Length: 87
Image (cartoon, rainbow, N blue to C red; front, top):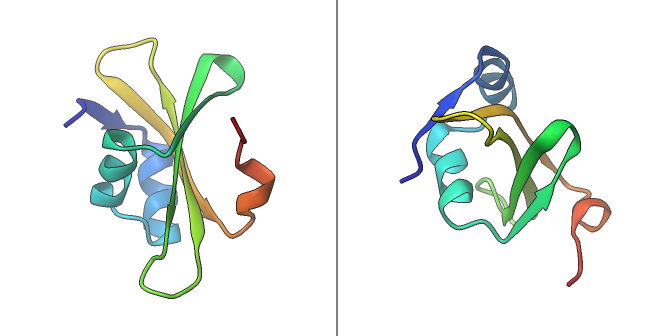
């Protein structure tokens, strides 16, 4: 398991959006994709169903320049094609 902390913003957004720490940890442990973001952030993302048949993309923004890593924000989106990067 990756050693991470959650920013206050990330915790607020996770609660508001119905995303659990376990779901975030699952993405961090086995991401389908890892992308470079702005401001030296790393974006971990994986597809998930959230209890329905509809697929979402769970995106976790992490500051990896500090130890332990800090989850900056988290969200899910149904616009998978918009953010999915083909190799």
